[in-house]
Length: 354
Image 1: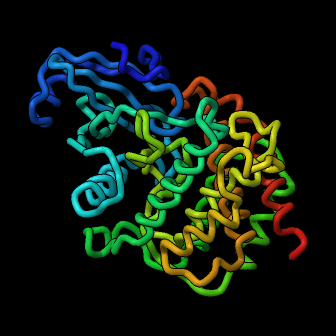
Image 2: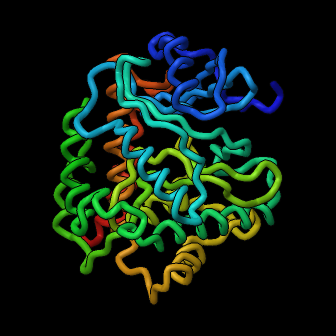
């Protein structure tokens, strides 16, 4: 089928499951679904294996499931992904795929999973957005900014997510969590990571806020309209919770600090952004502040450094799972030096205050 995404592969050996059982489940739990089904796997999605499912009537779905093997504590909670997507789909203008069903019965395909609609569009995994005009790059960036502001403007209690996470002290709890997760997945001594583990909790910005946090908000986790320069859906809600909105914004803006030579996550540091078509970091922050009714965004380097530290811990976990043989992507083993690069960059942003 010509409208299938290009990043689909046959289901990898480690992630095979009983497709007949999935068919039976979908016919009962997804309205209008009929067999037989065809299942392919998305490359990427380092944490939760993600599949493209086509039913006998040509309707297309996306399935996300927990990976096989021993899992780190509190990771891969697909039920939380489903819950936040359903709340946003039902009650807000935050664009997400329509959710269809959540299955927590491991006897169906081996692990918990959920099904949602497949939305045709563009996944711009390369932050350089090749083939897109500078004018459209700017509009896509502004749409990404607008969607994040919409998310952070949601009244989480009103949409039924008042208990989706703990209110307050998000940064402290995240630092504790990811320091612990990093230590569980540690394979080498990284000095900057150890310095950040001490400096960040000792230098928390004043004030605290609670909003719905995506947790991995970036261009590559959105679907851009097939032809128009606007975001039509946000994907990959695995790390979402209630948290500090500037942590989400800091993560979203890491690309401004990545430079050439960073591998798959090359960013915009040192580029002529005006010629490229996207706003400067300060312009991007100003647009977000306007949309969320903020006078200013203080302690910015802290939030970017925090986001880099957190990402370093996450990719170290991906690397460790790759070594252990149960990562959801074959590229996981290439993450060996990524945590060190991220931690070094984070420390460079704050070491003058140390």
